[in-house]
View 1 (spheres, helix red, strand yellow):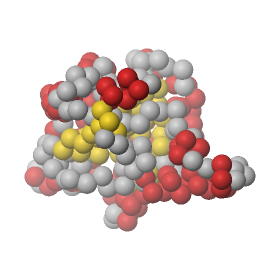
View 2 (cartoon, rainbow, N blue to C red):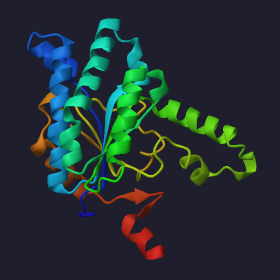
View 3 (tube, rainbow, N blue to C red):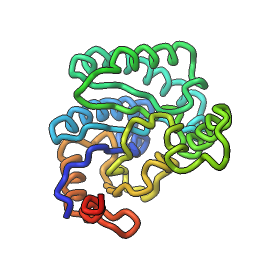
View 4 (cartoon, rainbow, N blue to C red):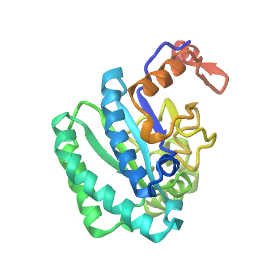
Length: 239
């Protein structure tokens, strides 16, 4: 047992559409409920002691969804950032966005840049919104960055590549939570989650709350984490 609260938790937020269909409502209804869940869980992280929360808001593959749904999602992200920014900033939460932001609208890019700059020094936690994000795309972009920087092939190792990810200053996630009962990573934080613990729950994302988060943390605390066959305790003794 590691007995610890995870420092960084990543969440694959699945089930908005199913949640809406169960209520005879359109997908947009589920997405709005899903946004409310992000806020609820962000504040739950503060309560249990989680310092970094990464949420999978929109993947690079999500552009293939119906055009009306994509437009509604982008509008919802933009509105949510504007509406919730002041409260997050007042609570000392730093906001960062991971993904190919240059493919978003100029207005959205401007909002993201402003939010990141204004919250850069906030000390009470990090909300990492993975928007237009894909784990494979992140690795491609990291390699492109290496080439642009003129780094020689023989100089490239894991630490050099990791330094060119979207937010290399963030620690790797200790725990990845997936809602709605699906058992796959779906291209989420592929490099960063190499040794993350996984927790899958049948709870649909709009219903996910503090008690679900506490169950996931308790599940994590019961595990013995291993890194290449060595536990966290063994690694600490070897340092």
